[in-house]
Image (cartoon, rainbow, N blue to C red; front, top):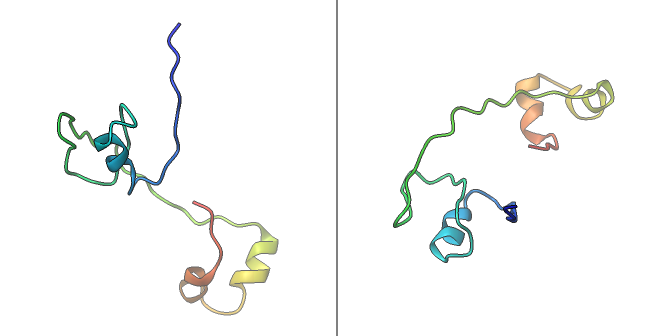
Length: 76
């Protein structure tokens, strides 16, 4: 059997973990490869806002969606 550990980290910090030798592979937001590595695009990721009726009533009901959405709490 092959055992490995998964580490979840912000993609802005994963290249540093790779450079430091703390991980063997990483998903990163950088287009520049770490020495000895290659960069491959994973594809597009589209985000769609979705919300329960209660959330809409609490956070998005008072005004146009374009104005209210930037101030609403989110989970990505």
